[in-house]
Image 1 (cartoon, one colour):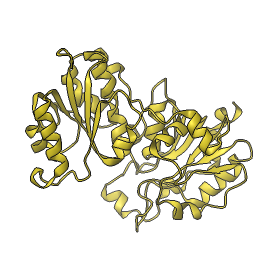
Image 2: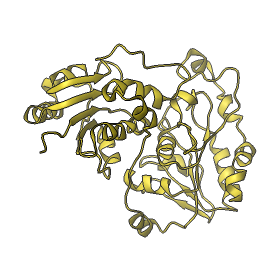
Image 3: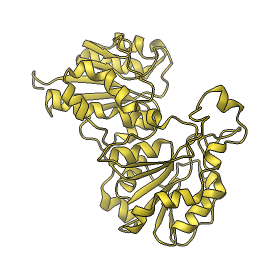
Image 4: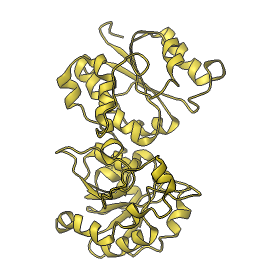
Length: 339
């Protein structure tokens, strides 16, 4: 190893959206320390799959159980042992809370930045999660221009391999009808009613090929909006994460609720039509910039956003999502449909 090469360990587990947003740090580190900087990452097993084809990362440690003490976690001890043999120049903890505080201190690193090591107020109400994330790692980069220009990016499976497997057409629009809360026994507050999804799919499929995406385990949910019209390709439960990245990257657009694939699309600059109800979309939704267009479709009710508040818990009607009509979505998509 070149002695001038920097060794950096990034800690960021969390859901897909959290991981996608945090990838802006990779190019920030490469801009600051050069393309030969060695970047390791601590992620969930899902995160490891997300980064499968990202050659900018040297190694991704898979951590299944975040809260298990070091003494009982083989995975955490493995990370510490690796750092003892190959100490890091920088450790940057992007994970919220104190769950990785002890691990961060046990890892061999010359300098530590991020959550638990800085008193910077990173959360600003009404600001994108991307910008909050940048404020966490900015002190480690110490270059405002680099941090400002850094954007998330993902790398998927080779296009020819994905097309060979799924026989996708040249042009298509993605429908992402589910979200991570699809198994909730109570109201899924981020969901759009199934009958509206069914109606939208029927109308859109008359003019463009649709690709339906969904995770393994969500098949039961999609049975309730099936059968699909003939001009629909059903990929529910069929793609790996790296294949999904490629499918999203090459789409004309994606229609989605505020959930993981929306963040994937924003990192890939795929036009997004996102149905927003209770969530504060500028904080938790897909980020918007001139390079990645995001169209928010919402009723903008006075009670919204109410996510994780007593207002949401008391709501039995989910009116902010239910009152988004199929016509509203079609009107918003008029430009991309004409193309």
